[in-house]
Structures are given as C-alpha cells and as structure tokens.
Length: 193
Image (cartoon, one colour):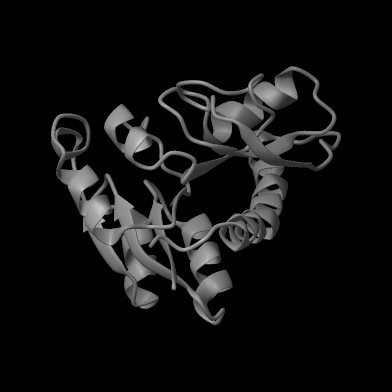
C-alpha cells in the first residue's frame, strides 16, 4: 500500500481533491493530513473524509524532531504539500529526499520565494502582463520554491482578470493535474522494504 501524507495550512480544497482522487484507487492511501493551524478548514474536510489529522506548532516543526519522528513512524511514500505555507525544515527534507512535493500557482523560479503565495502571486502575474500563468509541481528542498520541477501547465490570463478570477482558473488546473502527477510519481517508485 502506497502511503501519502498531506500538509496543508488553509481551507484544504487541494488536499480534499487529492484525497477524493485516491479514495477508490487500490494500493494508495492518504493516511494523514498535518496542519500548522488548529483552525484550518482542512481539518474539517479531513474529518468528513475519515482521514486522521495532526496539528503542530512552530516549536514542534522547527525546533524539535517531533514532526520528523512522527513522519518516520508513518513511513510515507510521498509527502504532499497542498497549500502549506511554512518552509520545510532541513531535517525533514534530508530524511525524505525526493519524497516531498509541492504545488505553486505560478511559473518558477520567476514567481517563487518567501511571501509569494495565493493572491500575491496572481497579482504579480497580472501586473507583469503575463499571458499564460503556470502551475508548477516541484520537489521540495530547504529553500522556498527552489526544488527540481516535475510538471508545469498553463492557462490564459483574460482581459479584465483580477487576482480572484485568475485564481479560480489556476485552481482548476491544480485540481486537474496535481493528483495525476502524484499518481505518476507513486507508480514509478518501489514500495519501501
């Protein structure tokens, strides 16, 4: 059984979409959703999907091995960031090389880095006159939005777009492609011994 662990900070629509995608697929399970916010909407979505959750704080994540030990016990085949806004600490990145992926709502590296998420990204794309914003799925390393790119897809920027209207189209791209790319990565990997 392939084991996916999701990290999310917000409402969790991407996490929910991934969980639905794998719900009836044999051999793959979303075993846990972890969040750095006890009030995150993703926790309610997880409850409805009967997926276990864990909430952690900055101390647990950045200044101890508590989250790392928890992940080691789960032994995930893939850790998937789905709207998770904190930089993953080096101890976790090193423990799971090429097994942590993230999705970014724009072209990387041009629209990446600390603070470049959500509406900030969409506003920058519109202000810079981009015609085809891109979603980027990439491996996670110890820098924001810096890991090797796995997949990109684009949609048009339309006349009169606002960050909100552009976000809707970008989210549709994310929902379409992120679960499929996760499945492809898992298919290429052997289960751990």
